[in-house]
Image (cartoon, rainbow, N blue to C red; front, side, top):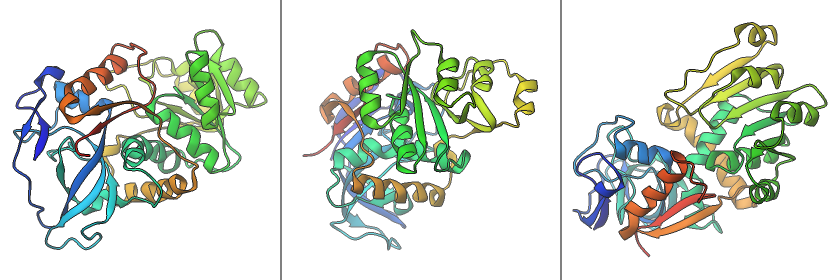
Length: 333
């Protein structure tokens, strides 16, 4: 099979594209013909060696996939040959990734693709959607009628947060950095859009909530100023963090506890399959109903996997501003 792979960590140039043996599914696995995969920042961190993970050699990168089951291993019972599936959590913790024509995946990490939902949409929504859902509902217990503020509403996770908040009857407030991105955030369902370059974010959040503050602050960026976050919170509000491994912001202990706030942190790949499947069930319903969509900003063939990683890295680490939405890679088709 054709695959993108690397023998050692480094820059995007370490990614090779060539032939690897087609894997056979082991106990509890199915083999998926990968019709779409997507790129996430964590993929680039693992490839670069910034995030240490056990890596088989050669290592195929990629967390997300969508495609068709082409073989079923011993003991695997949830899917049959020909079923359309999507999933995430590959290319992590020693598992091979999805930048290949075929991928063997433990069936617990796979979900049925709803009729009418494209493979591209399913793959592009996978990791970012599960991450958004875990933060909103596992951690913050968001309810209808509440307000969620998401910092970075046109990032991969931020776009999912806006749509999921609206899907459950919550109000979504977000930040963007341009008029073009403000338009997109409103199209996705944001009730209030704040330009962080020109507006006072805390003042606008309070204005949007009648002075009360936001019930949930979903931080998609490495946190830098918890004073502003705490100031913008409603009593008993919940703060969610899921980025910034090296971030060491000052923590305003007094205002935090006086307001009765709580702080929740998580890494998606550390959470068990059954918790993530609950996210996928909601996502499948919303995808089928048209309440959830992934915005695709760039598409690459498998042969240009290194270029796909380079584009993601330029925008995540270097803030190039040349990408809005997800990057999709087509291993086959």
